[in-house]
Image 1 (tube, rainbow, N blue to C red):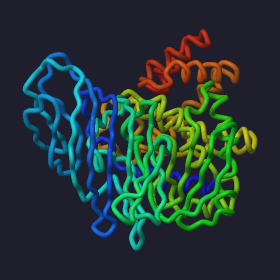
Image 2 (cartoon, rainbow, N blue to C red; image 1 turned 45 degrees about the vertical axis):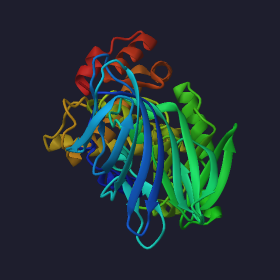
Image 3 (cartoon, rainbow, N blue to C red; image 1 turned 120 degrees about the horizontal axis):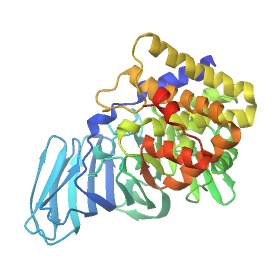
Image 4 (cartoon, helix red, strand yellow; image 1 turned 135 degrees about the horizontal axis):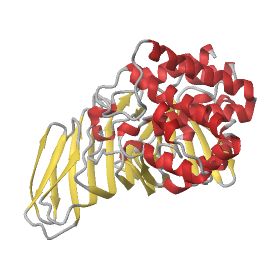
Length: 430
């Protein structure tokens, strides 16, 4: 448990403040097409992008999140002008006749966050702040498809959001790797990683499982990620929903943990812990659980963030019970409870539904992850095995591919079980 808890603390320390990325809500993006080229020497990026989106029937402008990027040009039907201010791109149109619009833009940037260039190597990965490497609507409830073309040196490999759809030589000694996510997903789950990777592979009922690292051997990767196929089957059964595409990748590199659609980046040193103790796979399970609870069933806004992180934390413990037995599960749950009780003893307890996720403290994050997971355990004990998992499956099926609020979760559990949970939610969550 000591190692397990230390890794969770590291995860929370590595997690930036989400609220600073912006919550633009003026457009409904249907799709992005991005061509991105990183410069490893300058630690910079340049990009071309097409965005297809809907606006209100009388809208003459649209706002997007662009972080610290410099937008050089914006073109499209009826585009009058554009400007940037406070991390936003505002596009103004000379006509209100269109509801569905398309714009093309170019940009450059030297990201201070969102893209991590590993020192001393041609390797990088994205983490959290998608708006620092592409122009997007960062609102967690806005789901869109994406096609991403990543141009990198020919001797490097890469992993991207969704599924690989091809690669070709470009500009001499470079390769353009193309990835596509056709099922709409929130922009924060878009991302990529590139480097000189070693790799291993597995499969589970037609899902290709690929494991990458800039340091571990293929044999070590196979050992570290061996439980992935069983985890995937477990989460499919508990959610009642199959994994939504035919590939899932995991990469060990850098100093962050981040779930993205179709893959996850895990801190490079984490693999050593798993190799020394095969039961320390909570974070592998946590990031994979996000493919359901977080990526496909997404909190409608960050006030309901516990529906992402509390669920993934609880599901990692539930998987441990499946694989290692009840004692391991209770070890995890007791560790989560202890963190929550320490926060409570400091007088820092709050409802899991935050009025606003502005400048979250470490205690706030502990509540979202650990109180959230512990409350799901208490709900499980309250409802009993059959009703609890029946409710989880009903909730997961109903809101798969949709934004969700805590009230949606409560009502789904009540409908599935025939139980009035108002008192429980008032005590533990609201």
